[in-house]
Image (cartoon, rainbow, N blue to C red; front, side, top):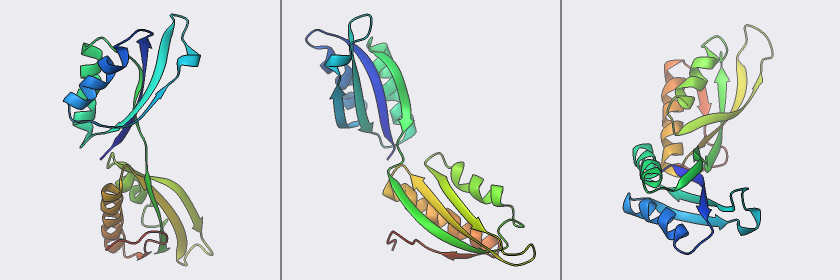
Length: 170
């Protein structure tokens, strides 16, 4: 489930927070946190409120944003997916020769996971390399799916995958 963080600006009067929360609930979002920043009013005397919620998928998250706008809530920032699950894997083999950018893009193109760190050791041009790759995803299930994608990529490129170093997948 993607975790979305939005910042809305609300008038400083009763009922405004409820006006922002109702569309999230109605469209199937699960509210995780609310940070009401009364001490940081905008020049128009509006109160910035950060709301984090999860949704079953990005389509529902986008419906929530549209419902907020339609209800008159001023959405200042949205669609910031937080990557909340992370693991590290080791890859051994001819990593560069088998198109490293393609390997990274297979994860990054999912929309729910991305390679956030890569460290590679290449002892000699024609010898196998070693890479430590760190992947973050929007949730544990999505992280497991990203690891499965990496398994398939490594299998197809004849690379050895040592997995996960800091997680336990079954």
